[in-house]
Amino acid sequence: MSVPRLVIAAPSSGCGKTTVATGLMAAFAARGLAVSPHKVGPDYIDPGYHALATGRVGRNLDAYLCGPELVAPLFGHGAQGCDLAVVEGVMGLYDGAAGQGELASTAQVSKLLRAPVVLVVDASSQSRSVAALVHGFASWDTGVRIGGVILNKVGSSRHEALLREALEEAGVPVLGALRRASQVETPSRHLGLVPVAERGAAAVSAVAAMAAQVSAGCDLDALMALARSAGALPGAGWSPAEALSPPSHDQPPRSDGSDAVRPRPVVAVAGGPAFTFSYAEHAELLEAAGAEVVTFDPLRDERLPDGTRGLVVGGGFPEVYASELGANESLRKEVAALALSGAPVAAECAGLLYLCRELDGVPMCGVLDAAARMGERLTLGYRDAVAVGDSVLAVAGTRMRGHEFHRTVIEPGAGEAPAWGVVAPRRRVEGFVQGGVHASYLHTHWASEPQVARRFTERCRTS
Image (cartoon, rainbow, N blue to C red; front, side, top):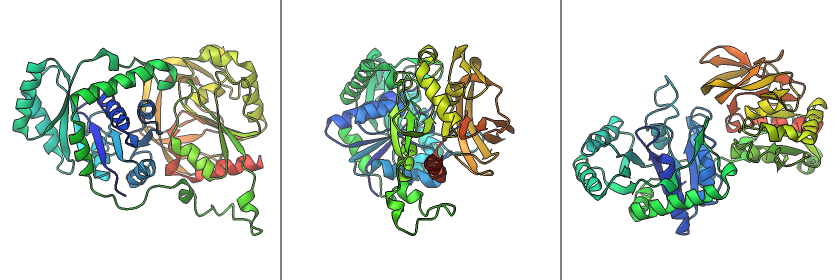
């Protein structure tokens, strides 16, 4: 598996990784290259900008949620057939899961991918000190290869000259210098950047501005040469079909050969501006398990897709669209009726809120006897969890890793049959298992436990 590749990292958050990574993706795509976009960590928003820049699905590489052993295979799956892959890092280069060393850091992912790192440095308040900063990052871990620096927020030509002179002493090449540009800035709110799906033409303009800025300020030929210096990766790319093989013992293949033509149950997956958080591998696993995945928009569609046998409602921003979601009474009633029938329903975070009785006083689907509201504190972090009982997603005792990312609160926080027992960092139960419903605040990555998709699809067939 050999794809030219770069990891775009920074000393800390706020240095301009997303601007540079997205700009590079768009600039190389404008040259006619097939560019594979990736993001380190559990972030759902940046991959939307990456997809807009490349025309390909943005994919996450998370060594905590999926395990280090799946990082390279998932990368290979996304990058198959591409001319270049650009991987945007998370936080600072060496920042990862709290208290667990390098786990889930950009540095770890760069080593797992054997990929050179381009360090994006906010140079706005320094000159010669930039050399000490870059030298420290380049020498901290000899397994991480920093192949160059892109200077961001450079104040003037004189400032740029001072920075370049200093970095000559550090022995790390400068591959670009970018000035401040308001056109590339993206608006933020309580959970980070505003997603692409909510910005429309403004997002297109912002990505175009990023591409223009990067094309003008960076040496694209040198960056491509650096990407080509990455060696081949051992092993093959991840495959959803292979991940689901062999079939689980409780669903043996039919002896009459009819298994290949079994009906494909329709699984409705919520999308649109209110539900933008999803991993592409979830839909791919459902399809590989035999489902027909159909996306719908709870803000606009008044009915579930025809023939819906199961429902997946992922993360997003229902709190921003509560009034519109509440006003779509016909769809809310259909969702409630589907859940009442015992059909499989998997809901994560925003999906959990949508299934509640109300959100900030606005009526939701009423599947769960719980009320949701905006809170004052951000809840953020990785979680180790175990399934408390059997559900449409997992059998009791199944261990999964998840990520929590919300500023809302629900009361009660767990049902009589909780979805998960969270074992780290703090022991508690959370979420709801009710009939065919599995609803939780935890975002999970099904590639780490592919049989979740098989179990869910089989329940759609038999419910």
